Length: 64
Length: 134
Image (tube, rainbow over all chains, first blue to last red; front, side, top):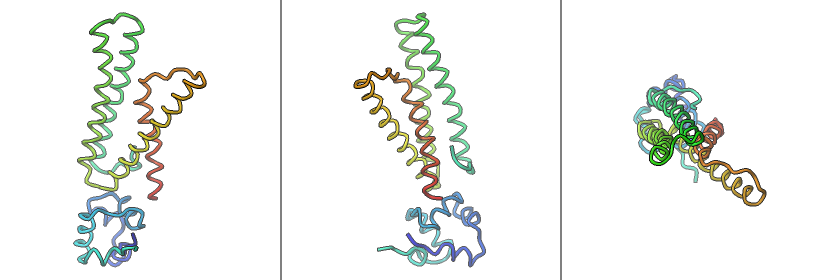
């Protein structure tokens, strides 16, 4: 699934490790989500949305 | 097992596995020796045969505890896929070896090798699964 995590992270000048710490997950998890190789669960997607103060749809793009 | 052990949950899991794995080897050797040397018969022999299964059950239990305690769904996913790889690899290898035994006269493979074989396949699977997400 495509996403804007890298952009949102860059806007805040956060590294993958910074974001991982805020989400309480591993850096590998952030990397896998960011590169679209792993789709997060709904609770983690909501956590991301809350962290970036936006909506899930604004972060993730459904590839239909 | 984990490429970079970071969380306390992962550390706890690995420590527990390092405790139960040697116990399994020691109990298996003890059971094997006890039976081979012929000193044990009857109930003590049965009890000794059951003993190696306890750390195996412990390992499976602690794996379940880890999957329950690990809050990082990606890490859970890596382990579950590796366990699936371990199960598939073991079943496939045993099927092939069973056929070889029956059809080509290959030497008999003792059932006690199934458990170490399973974890061997899990250990091989883990980096392969991890590479998928690199």
